Length: 333
Length: 278
Ligand SMILES: Nc1ncnc2c1ncn2[C@@H]1O[C@H](COP(=O)(O)OP(=O)(O)OP(=O)(O)O)[C@@H](O)[C@H]1O
Ligand SMILES: [Mg+2]
Image 1 (cartoon, chains in turn yellow, cyan):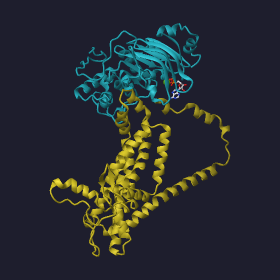
Image 2: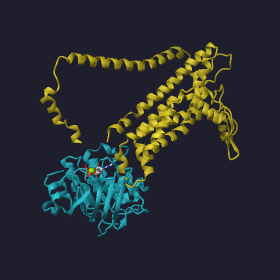
Image 3: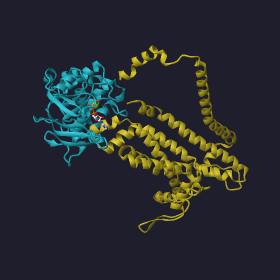
Image 4: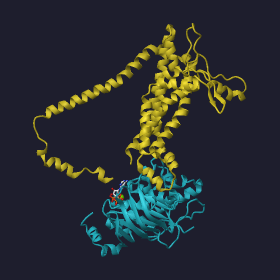
């Protein structure tokens, strides 16, 4: 658009031709001082933001790096009383619980956001938005209690069949984290979908494409990288959640999923696994940290380092991968 | 199947069948709008317009800003329904079919009546080729050979084929502004609508790109009925067979273009084309 790139000629001439509008006194120095002060303060604030991350990372490396080795990654925890052992089951457990939470939470969050931006009415949307914002502020331990009440504390009965037996379980852990994931994914996805210019929706509508296809194949696809970024940030957030898992996944010093027997038994064993308590890094860190053993304290530091590196690499990696599309959505018409 | 347009080079005729009908040969008026009013609020944005758009010709709509040109254009393919609360009264027939009959699906209307917008808007996630075929693909056409044929045909009709034939896989938004607008026209004609609506299609383009789009409009009218909104009266005289002048939501005058500009019947028309307002 040539009009946008050309400097507005009249604006320039107005400033230079009417010097009376801007009084020229000796306050130039004062103004410059104020500007320096303002930028100094913002720099300080920016440093305050980044400093805790530096400290946490530095301290974790100091305390945990010495206990990190391959065995730590690939071994089960040692029997109580013995030193050594690792967090293999907690690594896997963290991934399994996050996977369950994502399978439940990501579609609900994304499709909910699509409904809000593409279909919903203004009043309904503001109610849902307010709801999601409130849910985002609910302490995560509450979600642990909710999942506890739903799946740990009583059987789930549907049409007279007991479809779920109560008890601490992988599934309950995943559900608790899904509760945290849903409002976060919903809100971030909604923000990105709103960035998609209306022109694309109009163009697609004018081609006689039906609404649902426009939402998924045009709008969501255009915003895909932004959606992925939002989802990954939310996933990184739940990766470190401890409180909701205390009531649900509980923790486990052994594998929750054990595959023995013929391949035909696999689905059954899998279902069994989901009904078992499962280990997760935050839980492992928690139980090691409050234990009386020095060796466990060291392992807690190391596990914390593993967890934060995991979250950090997830964040940095995805930000790198998704950097251009988000910018493109925001700058191109 | 009708003969392909003779724009730049002979184009092979489409052999595969599709769900989307080809342009009809019909001597009836393309659009027959009777007493059409459109409301966003209490006050009508378009007020009792009765207008018959002849088939296979270019009809321009001119008028000062805010007089309801875009609104009227959009109700010709029910695009105004995207605005929450917009209402329309009166009837519009497309070759005799009531576009607003209760059993009519608006997506079908929009397949018959394509639209090109002021701001070119190729889909940013799609290549040039994908942009052209998107209307077919997302309406369920899978046949690759057929898609490829339609794509080439549409790009030729839009006078873009020679410029892009060697990089059909480049992103659509990597083209220049004028090329992007022709890509959007190709995208619209690829679904073979019966009518093309254009809302100031050249107002964001430089003179060379504009003249290309105008040439294109002249070519397209062999196969299509075109309704174009323009702010540029020279453009109306260059491309349009007949011109409608809107003022404050009302149709003031509708006449063959030369007649409207050379001896307008209404004083408002005369005032507008001589530049006394608008
Ligand atoms: N989405 C909308 N919501 C409410 N009012 C609208 C909307 N779009 C248009 N209007 C109103 O309808 C009237 C006609 O608008 P329209 O866009 O059709 O004008 P136009 O002739 O196309 O003007 P321009 O030449 O500036 O594009 C204007 O008064 C405008 O304020
Ligand atoms: Mg307009």
